Image 1 (cartoon, rainbow, N blue to C red):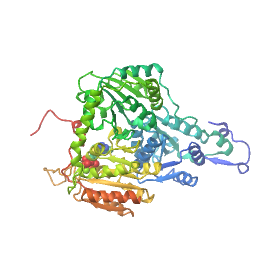
Image 2: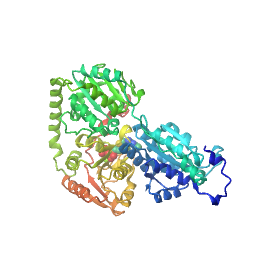
Image 3: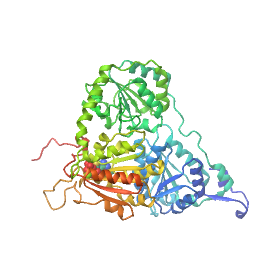
Image 4: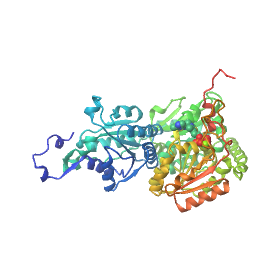
Length: 578
Ligand SMILES: Cc1ncc(C[n+]2csc(CCOP(=O)(O)OP(=O)(O)O)c2C)c(N)n1
Ligand SMILES: [Mg+2]
């Protein structure tokens, strides 16, 4: 704690310039370029939000903290600066906590700032207003958690939070600000001096030259090499160097969901449409900012062909990621930009092309799959099936490659990911590592605010329900967001029947629901679309006008499948009851 706060100078209060916790927090954020806050007001942070707004920070008020938190998390992914979420104590804090844990899991930099109740009362469990030991509860769910008790420590507290969020592998950080802190007064000059402008918050981490050489030796020996790009590669904003690396070595690449568009999905080396072939048959795989978690079947099992038939090279900033699931024969640890740059540099100009039979095999598989899909995407059935509706949206995204695509649901997610080609980096944002429902409107708002680009949110009707009230927020801030609800009347399908009673089945919703009416309540444009043609017209109009729009896309209730593409993860009992 700084000297000034402990021993205030013996000058009459009226004679000197003073500052307080409110202003020091605002100044500390602004000093570090953190100019946007996503949150929900209430005790003890209502005035803080007002003052921050008055001081030029953009403060976006949501209807639920979880959505504000998701907006902050995706702001972190898109900008490499920590997204800020602001909540009240206990329940507001807990509402924001899911998003904080999500940010940590997905390696997005985010800071959850929550007001908290009085320490003395909380620690004696004397029943304060919204009493909760928030710091202890947040700690296991984030990368770091800090509490500031004295105004003179605000500068350091904010600096530590920023560094923890963005350095190394990024993640969520919790910053606990007790109510009393906001009103604490101190000398303004001492306050100014206590602030910290964080220098080089995410320092480059260079890989060792031996690690680079080892990786290239393995890669050079490959007969059937594969590059896998993860969302860490998208986050790195090292787009040019990654593209040069992939093009120089000529290896087929497979983008993970949020890495789509890092190189266009239509690139001749893209193996997205030959995923099962390349995973099964590759002999050397280089993972760039992608983890071998469940999304890649942990690097083993039948997805990956013969056991122990491949060698993995992994590029990641986190040394502990290596050997997490299978042996990594060539770890390259450092930030993605530095690592890929070093690999590219050490490759030289005469890197051999991969064997042509491998390239031919991948290309022909890809072309077969694309040709098989094409007629399904052109159907104009009513009610729509997923392919008919997605075929139209695919064309719209092709014409508007800089729009941001938000996507969640089960079938709505899995099929849209496969059907809709992306052309630019960081344009596709979705459920991420957890496959979580509820990111939709928070992501749409965060993306619109941070990028100024139009947003197209493709939402399952269940998925949309988790954050649907934020359509009011979208209308209030007049954001260029077009939400398309794929309304198949339920979770996975709208056809389940409860044979044991009169309650509806657990996976179905109200039949014939009209989600488009929801946005009309707030002055937005609502459209009910029953055919691909109607859907295409409505989305194009919305993207042209920039008006907040919600399109209820009527999908055949029987069209989906259980859990989309991951039905195999549902537990099965050996006991089959008849
Ligand atoms: C927070 C959270 N709760 C529940 C789930 C389980 N879940 C997975 S997909 C899904 C909804 C799928 O239905 P919908 O969004 O309508 O997509 P559809 O398959 O019908 O196109 C749910 C509830 C989840 N993934 N995340
Ligand atoms: Mg549905």
